[in-house]
Length: 289
Image (cartoon, rainbow, N blue to C red; front, side):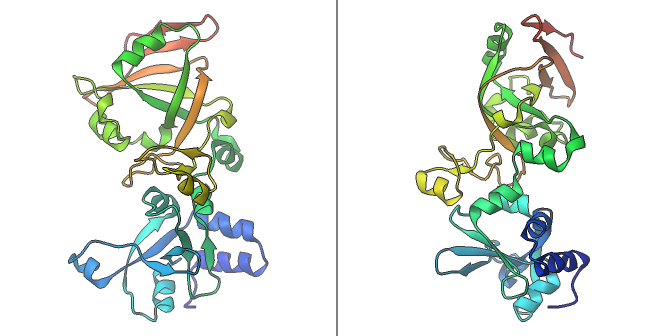
């Protein structure tokens, strides 16, 4: 092993004392060197996933540093791209593949796909336990125009389907970019705006991270619970390999006090149009706050 980085030193120390929990926590927040072939580095061919054939599955190979990668490959691989665990999960090529971290070195780790999904995209309950001062997460859901009136007409509105973590798209201020990120171009209005239902996620256990697959084999591969049609990813993220947006499956969630219907206009400005008053079971119209 080459001279270890500070991260690799902590990983080695945790591994040496048999502390798997700390090892997995470190890997969760790590940036990895993902090997890139010579031809792909020159731009002569597309970048391919680096894999190792195992007896029971294919393993996607990454390393904790460029030096570790070069040591493990005998300096045969010189090029790489930096990826985080959640970025790997967003573009995960096959739900039956596992992740090999530092193959050929000590310590090395073999993570099954279900472990990759749960490390990369923990549940909301796990997120809050890890950062108890972060407060309740805010989630949101893109709305079709017809759905807005349905909500406004309801005294005790409930929502089902999928919502996403508002924090993960807070940097997006253009409606078309947001719609593209969510793969929901049909949510754009004729004026080029997008309407969002936004609310605090009270009762975190009701917001289930959708681990699963597009068939029963995929669901079993990640030890998940849901089967959906493509382009469902099954790793807990919106099915867009270019984004890392956490999503949650909900079933008849009652909206809490303070839920809002917000318009992200074509000019990039957000305007609140309605706010839910749960005490009186009604929506209060707001003059574009």
